[in-house]
Image: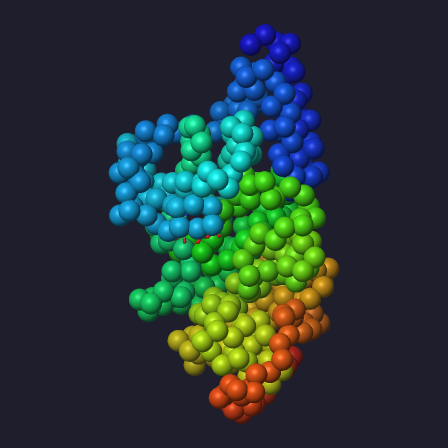
Length: 391
Ligand SMILES: Nc1ncnc2c1ncn2[C@@H]1O[C@H](COP(=O)(O)OP(=O)(O)OP(=O)(O)O)[C@@H](O)[C@H]1O
Ligand SMILES: [Mg+2]
């Protein structure tokens, strides 16, 4: 490439990155600008002179996953199936086959988005190793996380037990990963779908947030103020579910729900339970009002006073994340500081979290009052201090 065309490419990239930094959730400006370049310049623009994208051949991924064999299927989500693959160099990878009918992106837009996402790296984010774009096939290649998703571990049927230290490590790691996405990365990313299945665990049970930036591959994700809802019910902040307002604060709400799930080892919505217990944030708040928060904690974590005291502190942080007004939810950096005792929780007493209120159903056999008798809530006493371990 001549030096003048190189300059054109570089200034295109620079301006595109500037635009996307200010309009983070927009369809990638880089892709749009690169689209206007001749193909040979576009290719170089996408790599920005330095190769970030690892371009996998379809045949390589087909071989690695034994022809996308059912036995290699790790799971199937809203974007398509995910397969375990083994590359020739021995690396284990997770290959996500994006469903063609949902992603209507052109190849250059797709590559530009992949390029952008591969540039976002943090120890609490799953690494996107590269992609494959072949005809209408679009595949994403991630590092494989040995211990699978948090969902399988905390609600799985095999009775797997995570100690409080590990659970706290997971909560803190997710917080740090989100802080990076929201505040520290060169482009601001709102995840939009923080939930247990999108938290993956490595061999040491360190958490990594998966699927960040994935919404960028799909046409719905076009504006800061989204009119279409694209999260997971039960984890969704009221302003996003009702008015389509999407910001970091929606992720913070979802984080609050996830923290309660990790502590209680139950799903945020369970319609098999008595009506008062069906929605986790609502149930947690009712327990708090009745000074019975102890009942929320996974029974296997109870009966250790030191652990319980720590858990109650973390529940208080979760309640702050669940505040009805987005502005009242602390930013992720503050939440991480609270969890690591760098900031005193002090006077930050949470108010009633946001949850859909329902009329009580008269036909339920078990009413709230019959669950158990109230006792003083440790959260209401001022004597609690923050967890002093697992930092
Ligand atoms: N990098 C990975 N390493 C190991 N397992 C993975 C990896 N990525 C995904 N999985 C597994 O594949 C499953 C499906 O993932 P996927 O992200 O497609 O769906 P989901 O998280 O259940 O739903 P959603 O589409 O809303 O994200 C996950 O639950 C997880 O068990
Ligand atoms: Mg997922």
